[in-house]
Length: 78
Image 1 (cartoon, rainbow, N blue to C red):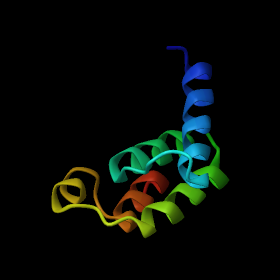
Image 2 (cartoon, one colour; image 1 turned 60 degrees about the vertical axis):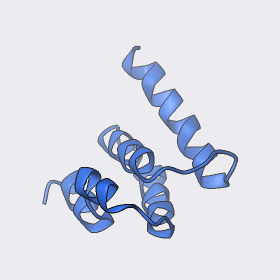
Image 3 (cartoon, rainbow, N blue to C red; image 1 turned 45 degrees about the vertical axis):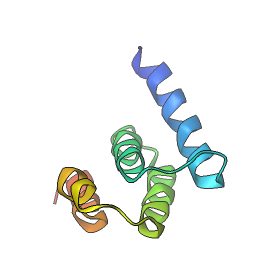
Image 4 (cartoon, one colour; image 1 turned 90 degrees about the horizontal axis):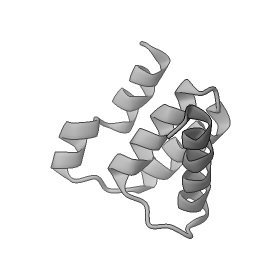
């Protein structure tokens, strides 16, 4: 998949998660957030982080993807 197509699909998926038309999975939300942040779509990435804060990740998901604060810091390179 080309980078442009991946970004279009990521944006569409993110919007579906945010508006509730798709079921939100913590890992998917964090992964999409990272992709969008790296591509410069900071607003949509921020909206996904807000969505992630409403989710209740399992201990396995936290171990795999980290907490919201950890993920946010990794994206910013802190």
